[in-house]
Length: 217
Ligand code: AP5
Image (cartoon, rainbow, N blue to C red; front, side, top):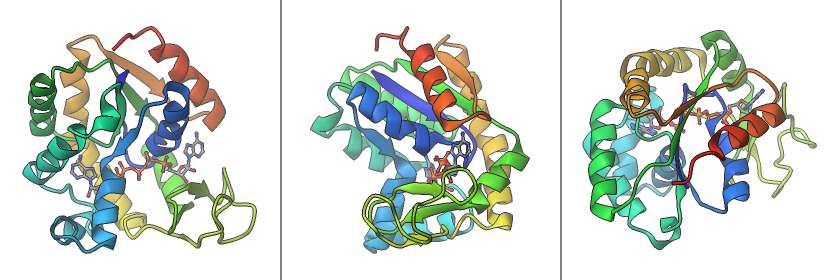
């Protein structure tokens, strides 16, 4: 199964990807997580990406496509993967087609998650992420058992630099302008499933798994 998760920042892509990893036993490939790791490790890619990410801007397409070319060539994706946060622009979608073509692979299904902008601001300003293991919590909807600490590894929780109101708004503007056209790109192929992402985490998980089980690739 080769899946794409598309949706605005904070809609719950990362949260749902974790369940899909367990259900289908395929890796999650999150471009945001990969970039943040590079920023933390101060690699040349991380140094290039950091200013864009802090400002809520997209990292240039060419940088993303080079990164994904290397990642998709790794062995763990041979039986499928979940792409979380990529592609985000039409040039990235076209570049992904070319990469898949070269690898002899096909996309199975594109899951499009939708909620209102106001709910996104509420979710993101209350998100806390673990510094050690990336586990994500929400102070309102999915709080950690011990304040400020991760349930999984007891690491410290932090508010992402791009989860402040002005930057969230900037990310949303970019999503509407540059990423929404990508939905139409895949809708024309008849492989998109639109998911209402406003309910409980559990209900959304069940809905996504039901809807994508009909796809074979
Ligand atoms: P990235 O990390 O991909 O950020 P994003 O798309 O903005 O998505 P988020 O990680 O913010 O949200 P999510 O949808 O995963 O939500 P989550 O599950 O955490 O990208 C960051 C930056 O990297 C970009 O701005 C850009 O600069 C760069 N970048 C990345 N990919 C790129 C690309 N392809 N091209 C160019 N640049 C790129 O959930 C959010 C919160 O809500 C959590 O607290 C969670 O607990 C809670 N929650 C989840 N579901 C529910 C629910 N049903 N009910 C209540 N709360 C919920």
